[in-house]
Amino acid sequence: MKSGGRSDRKSAASSDRGYGERSSGGRSSVGRAAGERDAGDRERRPSTLRPAGSRKVAEGAVNLLDAMFPNRETGDRVRHAWMKQHHQLYDAAEREALIHIVDEVLRLRGRLDWWISQDGVRGGKTGLPPDNRLRVAAWRILSSGAKTEGLLPLFPTGDTAIETLLRRLEGHTLEHPDMPPAARFSVPDWIMPELQRRFGADLDLELAAMLRPAPLDVRVNRLKTTRDAAAAALQSEGLRSQTMPFSPVGLRLSPQAYVNNTQTYADGLVEPQDEGSQLAAQLVDAAGKKFVVDFCAGAGGKTLVLGAAMKNAGRLVAMDVSKARLAQAKLRLRRAGVHNAECRELDGKWIKRHAEKAERVLVDSPCTGTGTWRRKPDAKWRLTRQDLNELVPRQAEILDRAARLVAPKGGRLIYVTCSVLVEENEDQVAAFLKRHPDFTVLPVTDVWPQTVGGACPVPGPYLSLSPGRHGTDGFFAAILVRR
Image (cartoon, rainbow, N blue to C red):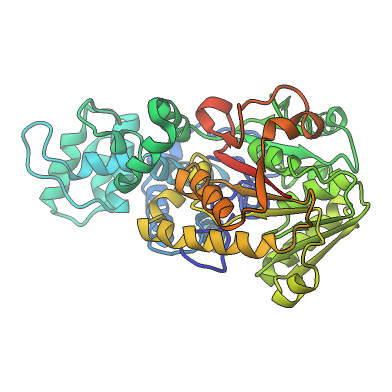
């Protein structure tokens, strides 16, 4: 999926693009990159966080957080560049601790800001405007009971307002009964009505799930191996996995796992991809088709699923507006052994020449990425109402363009987002059907048995997955058939 702020950039929150190549997919937010941890340390939790108490590590966390905001670049990319530049300044334990602090501050920023900015709980003075230095210090006090004296060196000498604030936090924990829901669940205030509309009575369940670290999900490449063999290969490299509840080609690892530096990954046997993303791509039903288009392919996460389903037969076209993302897709397709795919930039003339010829067209649409906040919490602090307002008409425009490619009499347009917002999902589909009365909805429950198998976890007509109810990222998919 693509991001909310720009028309030519994929979202940091995407659950397959950015899940493997932009993020290791193993952490709840900024992930890791090659070189940021030792190859033999693929599944280690930051078991000893003593370095987190050091001024050096705390300063590094503040500096990395400052580099992320108000930078519109994805958190993973900023983090990767920053860690690459400062790698030699920290040992392995310090790097783990630094990333852990950044993860936690991003994940719990709503709670931290509430503590920092509110009136004194003990009758003290009014709080201060939150910044990343205060957030790191507040996190240390509220999460582990750190004392003010050890944190004052982070701040200008003699700043009594800061000292008063930090001392006021001592003895408290991250939660407080007076916190409003947006602060308690650490989401922007403006989006709470949208989330309430989507989740209703399940709001607390879902927002609590979004606060928990996401597991590392990987998809097994059936062009090269089986799920059992892939699990054994990962086990031989020290990574334990279990089968997923829904995806027949998925394995789930711990949130701390990292596969991108394994031989199993290098050989193209597995690819990091959230289970929800795997399921959405499988519902395209590409097996046995002669002409399939991935209209917003990005770096090819779902293109890989389509190629495997097609077993390298037929024609698979991966399209995107970005040459850089398509270059990544080519590398991933080669590693996975997908040979029937071609990558090309989005081209109006090409669309016109191939109008009404594709049996399947996947539109992995630009979206807010709200479904991936447990994995990329920095994204929620970048997102604005203006982003959403700009995305909705852009999604409609993309759907209209992609629809031109769909063959009549049974051709399918599959609309997918990693958003949980009704405005981007059900409302968007309803508006499309009004503009295109020659399309109708095919319930996902009708397609599930022959594409995924097993019991469909949703009643239909759409695929609507969420972290709380299904243990996946938030995903939406609608199958639209041309009459």
